Amino acid sequence: MELKRLHVGKTLSEAAIHNGVVYLAGQIAEDATQDITGQTREVLGHIDRLLAEAGSDKSRILTCQIYLADIGEFAAMNAVWNDWVAEGNSPPRATVEARLAKPEWRVEMVVTAALR
Image 1: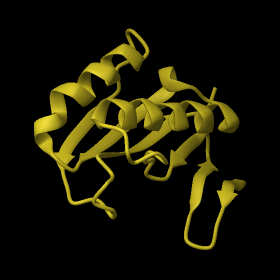
Image 2 (image 1 turned 30 degrees about the vertical axis):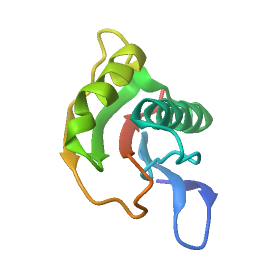
Image 3 (image 1 turned 45 degrees about the vertical axis):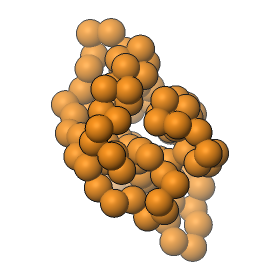
């Protein structure tokens, strides 16, 4: 089975594709000055872009892990998520509070999806 990586850097690849599944690296907002709503929208945009590049889309997400710097922002993040997620295709998901690598980051998401 072929293993393909997208946007390979020294530390990580943004995605790996193997055996009909795409695995995304944790996605964070590049503009960390935004509030949780803005950062969540940006992160979901990164996920859309990477899934499309890999040959998938949000309706094919198998699982999502969400890390919040402040679990008190769960409702605001979830409101953006609910507007974005493909209707009828809400994936299994976990959301936890975690100290992220940079204090200005509010949310990080890790997605695994099936290819089309």
